[in-house]
Image 1 (cartoon, rainbow, N blue to C red):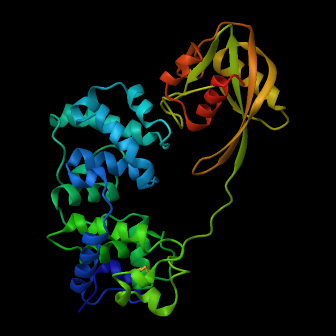
Image 2: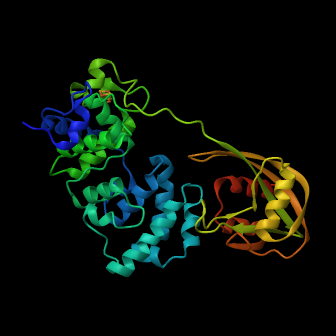
Image 3: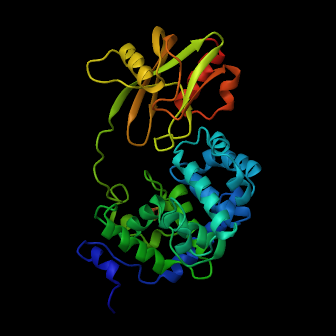
Length: 374
Ligand code: SF4
């Protein structure tokens, strides 16, 4: 029997390449899932709008973190029509603290598109979902299989890990050819009548049993099919490229006071964290002191000259691709009138009003300092 083209990528590696008979494997997996599945608010009623929102929130974020955000989001935006009619600022406000804010912007944009172009009718097929902004094959597959039972794969990091171990793949699992071969094998294994449950079961197994470190092979329903377990390779698979060191930057943030009011700025929509408000400032350039950075950045961004009075503290924060130390200064305006030069908008607000604007996590710590009169 000839193997599917995608499997050729695995042929030159000493792995098993395919699961000989997927039927007993899927039965064992689904029996385990029926017992072990965690209750999640979007699982009880897999209505497509709920599954869509949950899948976007779950990207890069754990279930326990997502659950309260999901419930607040659904209470505020219960349908795609309500979401599409909402102001982006209101969406960002609910998303505040969940991170990766482009997800919220794209979700809102997609809701507007669905209402305008499809009269609010959500797509059914995975291929249709992929036409929406920022919906890739994983999210499209998850929504179409969970909500409509389409027999399509949903391959996220958990699924790659489980299948790379099952098949004993010793090649870099991030390579497109390996990814394609893995996806083809997942597709071959999907239970045709329980596609959504199958996809969720593999993800759940990856989250609870086949964990990145110390997988619990003794309690695994797939142990007897697992090449990595049989060969003692669970600690080394899946193979990943060596991580590059994460860059670090020093950033000045300014709490500019004018009487009881503080100046805040909104980031441009095309920037990282676009649409969120912040205490203005920017990245330290070579040869500058942080105080000089603060003065230069405010001049460039807001068009006013400031005097730095004192440092309030420093906040360390990690993003996915860099780390930052935010050096926070209390400042007073000396000359000029605040205006949005390179930012989207500026506002003078009182300390109690700050919580009514969406801010990134690092800036929220500054708000807490101000509320406690630091
Ligand atoms: Fe993962 Fe161990 Fe199960 Fe293999 S036997 S799939 S390594 S948990």
